[in-house]
Length: 322
Image: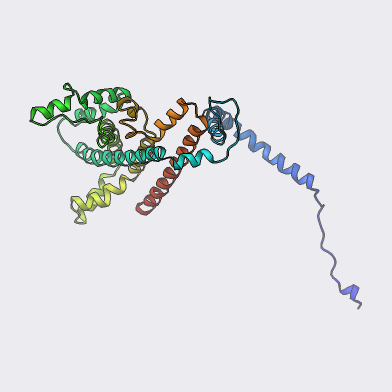
């Protein structure tokens, strides 16, 4: 028997598909899927168009503007790279504004939550008139920030009619220039915003407390857990979604503080209460559009980083306690 006779016969092969034929078949397979998803695409399209017009396009335009020296002082516009960002991160006045924004955001979030959580725990229990107290504490949150700013400007006024100074004089103390002292002005604004918004955080905690299964507290009591241990092992894990909302939204809102500063101190005295957004507003008012745009881009990057880190942290905590 020869070698050619021992060689196995070649396996039968099907018809060879050309690349164009396989691509056409894939396109035909995607068409029914596209038709099935067409109603959902049409429903999402208006929202995507609005998002693109009012967010994506302005962000891109701002990013491009931040790389130029465009201003109302000259009609010539030149590409200057990262010079505006270098100016934003090295100018002492701007660095002070960034520091004020961070200090304000952290202080407001910490104080608001330190007050809102105990109040929510108290009003979650069976106490008289708890519905009325909830309404009273939440009331300032529905007021305009400008209205609150003007109201507290009267309370903090250093003149004889300032309510706080009237109370101080009634106990034999002298007037304090709350909004005119660089060491007190930012703290006075922080107090104002804690007063206005802690009720909003309280409502979030109340909503989260009402979602916790009461059977968990009964099971903890059967295991011999007291109030503190039940709070630590049942209540706190149940409040993680609420912490996520209050911390993320609170920090981002604190970083973009603007209207309360304008209404109470207008950034003064001196530059003691200037923030990132008030400085950006002033640079735009001065016609320095490129530098002001760099503030906006930096603020967006910082907000995304803080939001992303906090969301990742809370995702791990939810996975740990779920």
